Image 1 (cartoon, rainbow, N blue to C red):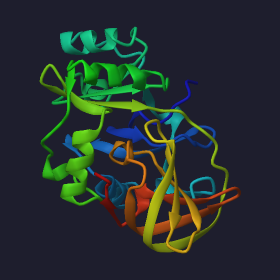
Image 2 (cartoon, rainbow, N blue to C red):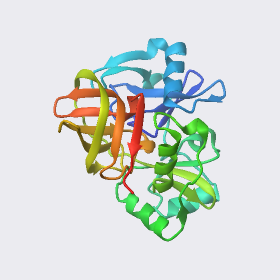
Image 3 (cartoon, rainbow, N blue to C red):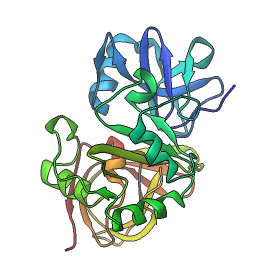
Length: 272
C-alpha cells in the first residue's frame, strides 16, 4: 500500500480527509476532515471539533504524537496521491515544469479537480532554491492580502506579515499558490506534556522551510526548546524573532518540543 504523509488526502465515509504529519500507525493515517457534506473546513481547530463530534470513535492516543488523534483505516479509504493525479490546467502545467514535474498537486485540485488557489507538494529541499530564484526574477510575486477565515493561532498582523515575506506562498500568473516541502523525520515518543506560557527567541534556523519545520529557541531563563510545526504559516520565521507562546511542551526522548500547531496563541516580534 502506498505510504501516505502530509499533503495526501483520503476519501473516507463520503468525506475528504487531509493527512497530517509524518507518523502514522500501521494500516492507518492520522487525518482531519477537509470536506464534509460539501462544506469545506478551513481551520485546524474546526476540523478537530467536527471530527470529535461526528467521528469520535476514530480518536486514539498515539504516543509518538502525545495526544488523541483521528486514525483513518486505510483499508476502508481511497488514497488520493498528489503524484498520481492528472491536472491539465495550463498554469499548473507551466509551474510544474520549473521543477521538472517532480512536484505533486494537492489541496482542492487533488480531491475536486479545481480550486481558487493551487497547492503543491515536494519531497526535495532543493526545490526551495528554485522558488527563491523564481521570486528574485519576478516570476512569482508575494501575497499582500489575506482572508480573515485563514487567520488562526497567529494574530492578523503577524499572519499577514509572514505571508507577505514567504517564498513558499505567493502569486504565479495571478493565481495564489502554496508550496509544501515535506522531509519527514522521527521525533520519538512523547513522555510528558506540560503547559507553556512565555517568551522564547529563535537562535538557530534548523529546518525553516521544509515540514516539519524546526527552530532552536531559548526562553528568558536560558532553557532550550525546539519549535516544531507542520503548517506553512510557521515556515520561514526569521532568526532572532521573539515569540510569545501560550501552548504545550512535549517532552520527548531527546528534546523539548514546543508544538506550534497545538498552541492557543502565538505572537511574534519580528526583527526589521
